[in-house]
Length: 155
Image (cartoon, rainbow, N blue to C red; front, side):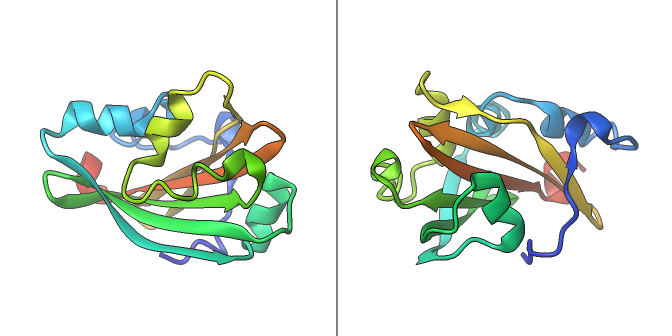
């Protein structure tokens, strides 16, 4: 999924969100936990995990132009992709444990550590796909998680 040219808006300024999508977009708890509650069979498929630079619209949110781990995954519910997620993880001492998580859900780590602070939600739309993103602060490092809800999740 091409995420480079999307227009992001703060959640509190967005109107016209369909009723079926809204509960997924506005929920500020762990998406992993919510998906596990909704699907008997939940899994993560790592599509790619590479080292590189974040996109311009991502760099401004994490306040870093350093090399990052760019991780793209599909979250599967009952063997079907229901969410596409893109995470930008700057390579620092604060994030060294996150870089080697393999196919473990990033959300499990982020939401199980009370020292990690989540930033405000932003949302976007591309056709029938709605997305949200927010930063997470670990120590002095901010990482960015973007989640795109595929239509089969809420249709």
